[in-house]
Image 1 (cartoon, rainbow, N blue to C red):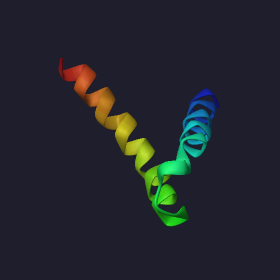
Image 2: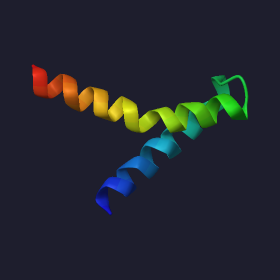
Image 3: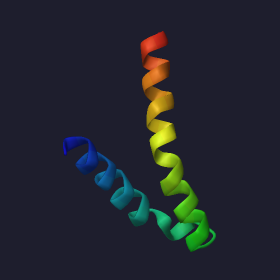
Image 4: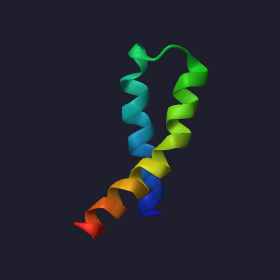
Length: 48
């Protein structure tokens, strides 16, 4: 449940900054990309 809350907070933050996105579809793609970004950061931390 805490992981879902964290994800929801990231989506809310992204929506707040969405004024610079081209359109709704682009924002949707960025939201779908969020989990992979988190996994990439975790992998980079574990390798360091």
